[in-house]
Image 1 (cartoon, rainbow, N blue to C red):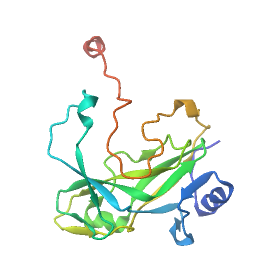
Image 2: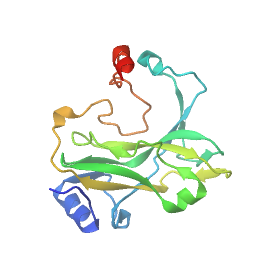
Image 3: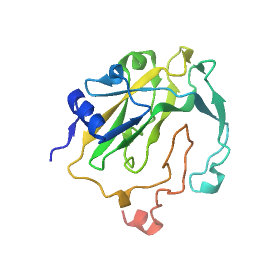
Length: 197
């Protein structure tokens, strides 16, 4: 089976048969020609000023301050970085993966919604919200309200279904903005390997 991006008719069919599941259900206006519009949830995590040692998972606590934007918009000053999440939580069949895309209009204003991590896999076992890495790279101060249509999720069909046993579980049941979890850290290469290469 070829790997391909799903278009609107296929997305609608997959929503009907459960291959793609969205909570709360996406309205008709949120289904785009090649994806589903996603909206900013009501909480963000703002990073504290700290030194982070990626080799020490134990010191990953207390990195962020949680803020509500339910009543007043998120304010991003030039250079600000925060974590947000989508209102929507997604679950897909094992033969599908997702990609997170920003909106062209917001990109022209200098708003990034992910920091290199645009592929969403490990999403077959439970519904999960998508965490957004929001960065203002412009000279504008931006105000972004809760519920704003901030990006789009596109869907890809893989060459074969993945084995659920291969999925990591550190973000299972993630239904709100969540900070980094190094419970499954990337393995460090040994010095012997580095010297040989």
